[in-house]
Image (cartoon, rainbow, N blue to C red; front, side, top):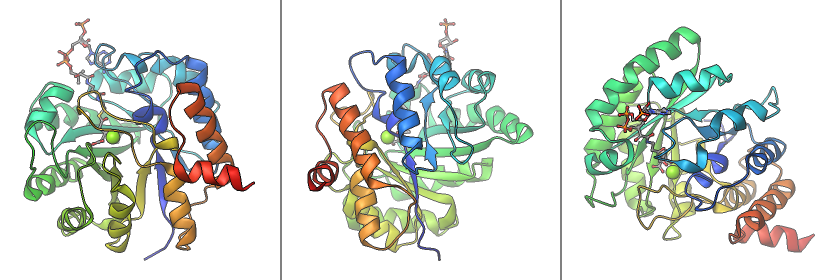
Length: 297
Ligand code: HMG
Ligand code: MG
C-alpha cells in the first residue's frame, strides 16, 4: 500500500457553513484559491443546499463561478438532491458529494428525511452523475455517535456505507460529526467498513471536539485509510450537530504526516499563512501547528 495520503480540504465548506456572520463572497473565493495554491489536490468549495438550511453558503453559484480553478486541483461541492445537482452543474461543478448519516435522528434534523428516503433521493443524482461522468463522494455522518440518539451501531455505519458504495459513490467519507470518537472505537468502525468496501475507496472525517482527531486518524492510517478530510485552522461544524466544534486542522494533519514520512504534496508554510489569515478574518483561534510553524520562521 502506498504511503501517499490525499488530504480533502473541507474548510471552505464545512469550515464556513456554521459561521454566524455573513462572510463576503470574495473572502470565500480567496480562501479556496489560496488553499489550492498550497499543494492541496482536493478543495471542497461550497454546498448547493437550501439557503434557509445553511444561509452562509447561499452564494454557492457566485463562489463557484468566481474561483480560478487550477487544472490539477479537484473542487467537489455538496449536493443534497437533484435540485442541488442541477445548480452545481449549471456553474460547471464536475465533482459532487452527497450526504446522509448512520443515525435516523441526525438525518432528520440535517436533511429532513430518513436514511432510506435520503438514499432514494440520491438515486437520480447518481444516475445523472454517471451519465455526466461526474465523480460522486458519499458522506456518512455520525459514525461514532449522534448528538440526538447517542450510540450509533457499527452495523448501521456499514449498512449505510455499503448502500452508498453500491449506488455508485466512488469514495465514502466516514464522518465523526460531533468528534466523540476515540481511537479504539474509530479503528473498529473503520475496519468493519473496510471489510466490505476497499480501503482505497474510504476517507475519514474527524471533528476535533474532544481533541481526539489526530489519534483517530493515526489508527485509521494504520488500518489502511489514505484519504483524510481536514479543515484549515480547524474551522468548522454543522449547525445540526449541537456542541460540535471544527474539523481537525489541516496544518496539524500535514505536520503529522510529514513527520511520519507520508507525503501529501501540501506545502506547510503557505498553508499556515492561509490558516492565520482566515482565522484572523473570522476572529477564530489559529491552529497549534500553524502558529508554531509561523513562529519558527
Ligand atoms: P426540505 O425542506 O425537506 O426540502 O429540505 P424540500 O425539497 O421540501 O424543499 C423546500 C424548499 O427548499 C423549496 O423551496 C425547495 O425549492 C428548496 P420553496 O419551494 O419552499 O421556495 N430547495 C432547494 N433550494 C436550493 N438548493 C437546493 C434545494 N433543495 C430544496 N438543493 C434539504 C431538505 C435537504 C434541501 C435541506 O434540509 C437542506 O438543504 N439541508 C442541508 C443541510 C446541510 O447542508 N448540512 C450541513 C452539511 S452535512 C455536514 O456538515 C456533515 C459532513 O461534514 C460530514 C460529517 O461531519 O459528519 C458532510
Ligand atoms: Mg463535517
